[in-house]
Length: 252
Length: 208
Image (cartoon, rainbow over all chains, first blue to last red; front, side, top):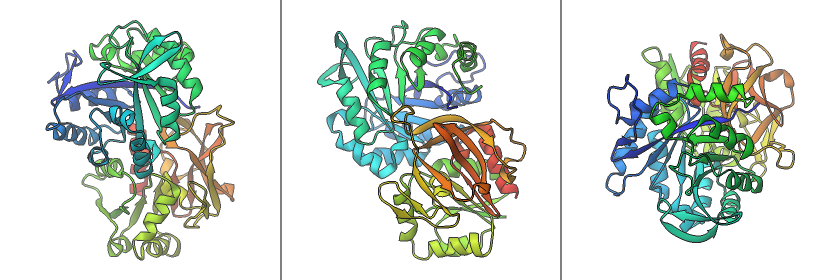
């Protein structure tokens, strides 16, 4: 039986982890390679890097981090943030990323998703959708970290990226992100019911119960979380044992 | 020992290179190449494969003499070859991804889209799933039944002769996830992305 995945996400800015894990055993709390290794040794099913570096000049930094991480972590590695063209994807994959996640560039031009999945295979193309609730059971796609409204309906967009070859959707609720009050389960349910590709839930996790809700109530195939793992509140193992105790199948 | 990872310019093989490099450290001489001469004189070959069945087969054919060299190596000379993901799928006679495409024809069978029971099962089949070992296989030495491996695919290999199947995994039906036929080995899952247990599969292959 296919297991539900737990994916810790590391936000990386100019080569350093933002909101890093406060583990005592860490030599350098800001080193993304070291943190990724801790997660992978701890049983993470995948590792996700989100590059939030604002400037374009620093792209080499994330590529270098991916290169080093890929030599030490032998679980899938997804990298997102600033992926705008085929060259960006090529660079990340050659450095050792297994999947790339595309956000703004997919919203601007859905043909980019098609081109990328045709060239590299759907298995490595994740489309990250940032959605905000606009009315009852209606969500809109936002870009630039929730600042820019696009007028695009999130459900329509999810279906469209699936048609264009996306292998997975990484769905973040902009209303919930950073609140620690749980995923937007209605949004998740709506998107997982209207698409046939796996959906990764993101945004809002504060407790282990929230992970359970994302999978069981929201229908997500994988759950992504940042701060509950960063701050050492829970280890990956705690999350897996909790889910297992509630009959959610995970890789133990 | 010389082991060659065939680089035929199709898909992303960085992870395969990284994990084989990790396991081979100091024990095995690893080459990543499409140079036919080097392939001929290797002791073992790894055939990765990402993207569609058609794109992988097309890329193999683009390199002059490569398909024949691989056939001589694996079929005529019966030297060990490990196919990963689409690398395994290409052993088949035919694949149906994108368009009907002739495979290498090394193990009779076909590659078809996983029957997801009208959307009941999401595709691609992405993530960690348990393998159910069907017969003893040299690459599964010291690997427990029901171990977790990482999968990402939408198509499955259906061999005519079921005795080649060494493990299956459960996703809508029993999907073939590894084969062994004489010197030919193949995994649908990605040992290079399957954590320590996956590295063990690689180690077993390198130790053959």
